[in-house]
Image (cartoon, rainbow, N blue to C red; front, side):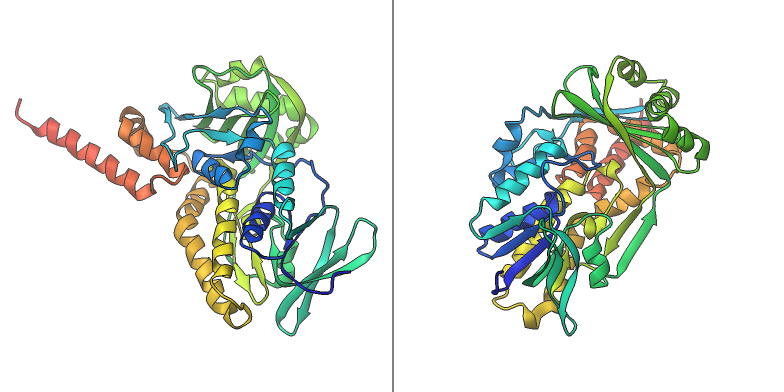
Length: 418
């Protein structure tokens, strides 16, 4: 039994936890990385990295191992919202042009092993955390049950919850929920073999009426397809429970009949079960307290349609490491560090969190919105700026500025003497 406390104990060793363990380990901290799973193991996810996040994976030194799985990359996005089409390449980000959607069965194992390769990271699978250890009002460790079934107490100067959307560490720490916007959608995910795309390999996104769908090329010669339908459609959801594949295909046929998507899906074979999630909150929690912190989905979960979860896990690991490294001693500075951590995350991530809060509501596109989307799709500069929102090369207000300038130029041209 180790007597000396670790610097940091991380509960949850998937993307957020393993990325944090790697960053902290590289910074010289003694880290304990824990997960109740045994890798490889799967989890419901669309597991996509836009090219800005691919750049972070390269900087971590893990990208080559991920690419060695044979997972294809892509550069292009095809977006159709009603009859407006936006089709283009993601802007280059940090020298990267390619995006990567790698299955969690590969991704989580490789990231876990990558973190565990550092000499000052102790990584343990099949450890089930059962609570936090405290001295007064400060968290000083985590208790749980190891693979041998025996209870253990693991002491650390900081305990980080990287244990996902339904975080137990967050609950035990008493983190306050700062924002919560419930989704109007039920989400379903399936993997398909033999799905055909038109033109260059790409991600596809559709919003038609009350249906939303997203497609990514992924590992093992498969495509992962996400489908969202309103939670209010109780009879439809009941049929999904009884006949998931039939319901999935029928919904694609009904919702996207005006596109080539349903026909291309008919030729594809489902591999494995359809998995579903019936409702969730887009929420943001208090980030840090005395002896504890949160990262990844444990801190902020957002609608998967915006594709930001993977990026935010990698980015959060860097920010927390930077905040911790700025102090030689943490004990007198919990409040100041919490403020720095929260401020940096909000500055970088909050705009896209609010984007997710918007798209998570079942609100039909107005004629005016559809007209703007047509404009974006017809102007290369606007298309690039739209896609750049997703890889952080552009902010939403920059796209708004471009659209306003295009409209002004068109109005001026119409008013000019002929």
